[in-house]
Length: 166
Image 1 (tube, rainbow, N blue to C red):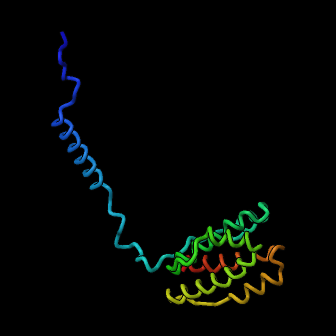
Image 2 (spheres, one colour; image 1 turned 180 degrees about the horizontal axis):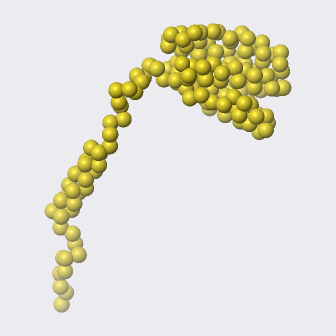
Image 3 (tube, one colour; image 1 turned 135 degrees about the vertical axis):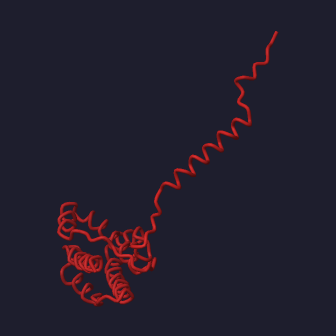
């Protein structure tokens, strides 16, 4: 004779009560989390990039034969776009085009990034300077493959560091 032992099968009412208890427990946990938006937090239009150590990036770029320089370029690209609140190109595209064009695209990128940084500084009522032409001249006369990009990235990073401190 078979016996039907339904004691192992959970009751649907019990499942519903357990899920309600779980939901109320999760809701109480969420209520305990403080609101992340405080009175002192900055509005979205005053996003400032985090300052970075210029000597550290220069040394790292030299030690890695320029690979860290590509990372630095991506970070500068992200910071400038975040600060200017304009998403014009992704860092992956910038790095890819720079590699494919043997750094010719990077010269264009340096100029456009300087223009965007000037635009962002102007919109945030900071002292602006447009050094795009200077950056192109530095790239061409210091030898792009000889390390001229390090000088230009350091100058761009210096401007970003000044922005982050103001």
